[in-house]
Amino acid sequence: MSVIDDYFLKKTDKVSFIELKKDTTLRIKNYIIGDNVPLPMVTDTLVNEIREGELEDELKVAHVIEGIIYILGIDYNFKFKDEYKTILYSFNSDIEDFILYRGLKLNEEKYYEDAAIYFRALTNINNKNVNGLFNYALSLERIAKKFIDSEDEEKGSKFLLESTNQLETILDLDPKFALAYYKLGYHYKNYGQFQKSKLIWEKYINLDRNEIRVQEIREQLDIIMDDADNEEGLDYLYTGQYEKALDKFLSLISKHKNLWNLHYLTGLAYKGMGEYEQAIDYFYESIELGGRNVDIYNELGICLFGIGKVNESIDIFNKGIETDNTNYKIVFNRGLIYLQLGLFEQAKADIATAHRLNPDDAIVENKLKELEQQNNQQF
Image (cartoon, rainbow, N blue to C red):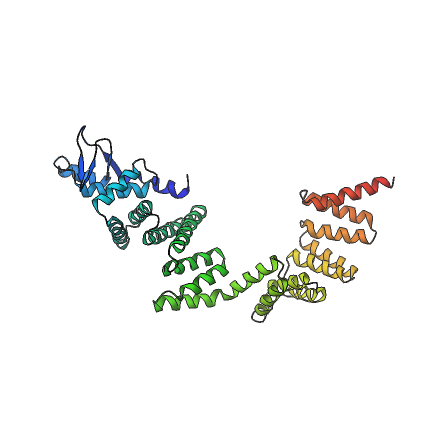
């Protein structure tokens, strides 16, 4: 059972069930309900009816309809779901508009939990009702914030993700539903998915006529633009499109000259293009700007070795290992250079250490076995 289903199912105490007397029926417009169908009522309403003595006189159809809406919002897979849906549409062919209106009124009156149940019921009886989906998404977002504020990040993130899913579903159904774009941009920004946020918001500003909201999103786009460019550069880098990545990173460096990570990423792009000397300059600059990530030293050492500066390469690997002696890659690479220099024992020691730090790397394991075999053949 999902966290969301469990959350709503715990609200079943909001609904009580009554049964018709044997061989009696209840007519709702042209639909006849038999005595085999339990009739839900909101518990508070039922208690009031009993207290006022009205329940015995007449079972009010409106109360049953209210109960059906609640139970379909609480339990998505209720046993009598299909029959209840038929009852709702028999009662009012515009029942979806009624449920939406009641949900919005409850929300306006700050009965947020009941509003969420109404919106969820609407998506249950029609999962293509975009207004229902949108308001249900907003309710899920509100619940997510409540959990996050109470430091239950795990539950909060699941409710927020489900809210995101509902908003994305809306755009599948109606690509011109502007407010879904508006909210989704914030969701993607929250996830650190700046490119998606940028694309969604760029579509949004062409759809909404509300100038206040549009101006708000223009300002948000200005805020995330550099993050979106950085993310796009990373995508290019990871997919081997090094020249495109370089264009992005150099553009960002022109605005943020003192960020060590941008110089590091630029170095990686140059390295990917085979321009080692350019890469070396940017890696050194990254260190000068305060970068202490061991990966900088590792990549710098590889480039220095690549242009024949072996001693400098070893020095850089040494400094990197002093920074973080638990990184198996840099230890392994220093071992490979020792091996190139014929320093067999030092090479074997480094490669054995790298294997101990990460016994799951097949390349390291195979190299260690190869060295051990060579060692055995010498004796």
